[in-house]
Image 1 (cartoon, helix red, strand yellow):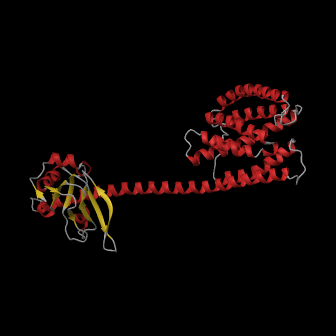
Image 2 (tube, helix red, strand yellow; image 1 turned 90 degrees about the horizontal axis):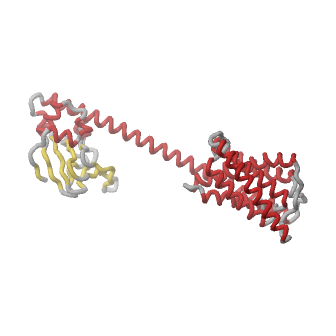
Image 3 (tube, helix red, strand yellow; image 1 turned 120 degrees about the horizontal axis):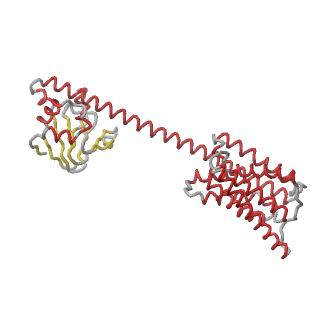
Length: 372
């Protein structure tokens, strides 16, 4: 460890501006006059925990590790001190033994400031007390900043824990929904219940079974109405695009049905137009979209970190498609395909209004043509 001449006041201010900003000009000159530039090698210890010394150091070059002793006789690295930062200030302030060891992790240069040399100057005691005041202010600000960082880290940890709890609820919900779909489809397949699956009564009963756990989980996850797509934000564009897409898909649906009918492979039976039934189906479609897009798709996108949302669209559509297994595999595939279209539409505005119109029109066309 070699020493050289002191640095000047301007160099000291440039080196530790955060500290010298609390120091009057007279104090800066006094400190610079007693400072000594020390060159150290990597691995050298400048401060040993438990020593009774109060030398102050300012890092000019290199990195220095702060270490605390462990009960096993070793030590653990607490933090790192870099250029422009002081260390050893706590012992200078309170006169207690060193609370930690400081070791050079790279070759470096520090400024060494001996309090006794500062006291030996004219009015040295007053100057020394002024230095302690500046250091106290600096340490207080650093503690405040550290506390704020700690609080921010704690808030992030609590947010992560809340996110994990919500994911747990959503995962259980997904299992329940799949189980319900499987039970209903098996009951219908094994003819344990004798119902007409093409009636509005069955459609509403089935939807009600799915809605109960859905809204229960939505409530306990604290999901807002706006997050479910029930918002006026983007409403006008959502409705406009939904209407245009509905007209186009309505024509496509009739064309597909006509083609399948021609080859006598139409999966369902054509149903006559029923005004009351179609109005009921509109509400039915809206509730399905709130769950499928507003809840399922949005939750998948959130928990999977799906930035563009495409995987979430596929997952939500596939899960919802499986709930239509009792209509046949063709209906499942068509539901998945149309669900992907609905999901892509929802991604544009995060508003269920437009996609509800598309769902409603597509559903009416599918039932009336016999596609379902």
